[in-house]
Image (cartoon, rainbow, N blue to C red; front, side, top):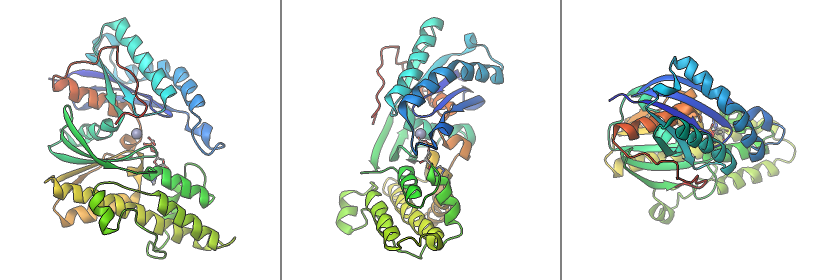
Length: 339
Ligand code: KG4
Ligand code: ZN
């Protein structure tokens, strides 16, 4: 069965619409309001919501044109129902519900985080099961045991405080880098020494490892970086690359340590990594290195599918339709803190 799915993403600042047939991506169009936030140093939900409203129809028409299909040919519509910014979600789900009502198509309100895993199917083919999924971005850092993407996903752990990308963005601010700081720290860290400063790894004490085997904590690390920067007075410039590299090492060490542990504990030979933070060069290298030691295969979609987009939602919609899961109908609620 190769259903044609229209996917709609609007959890944060990206308005994404994509068309997927089975596991084949036909078109993926994204509009973003990110450029508006550099001067604020963070996303302004009100601006993001308005931008979704303006971008939705042009983005959808561009996606249908690029795929060369008519709306009438679509078998089902999928839209992200959470987690995310409530205003952004409301615009996207309202649009999806209106489309479903007007066309009579089945509608699926889906979990954005699972979309970050499902999108891998568009690149590497159907997922084997079980797999461990590590989803890392500015808004989430979750470790998932996926026995069946349509029906059986367990959240093994997640961050107890900041998401990995959020920690990078906050440290970017401490180092006076432009927003969002993540990619800038990544670039800077490539010319620094990751062992120059031994920053703490959150939850690394034996009692914490036992209590939180699959969780992350980055706020203590962020405070340690802030203290280190303070201790340098005004002389941060000379050490910037070393601070970036040492900080990046601490975050990625924690992420990879927990992910590999989850694979070993749950007999999973495949680790799928998704979310905007998976663009990070050190995460990719470290995951490949440690996974190889355990004979684990690491799947990471190309970077353009790791950031938020409509393809991930269409891919998950396709998984649900192919698995025979009943549509949500139009009554479902948005859930900004969906687990
Ligand atoms: O998935 P995404 O586009 O949006 C969210 O749902 O958050 O992820 C964006 C996050 C930001 O925090 C950004 O700084 C971070 O991912 N990021 C990176 C890199 N590229 C993006 N962090 C570290 N290294 C990168 N190369
Ligand atoms: Zn995301």
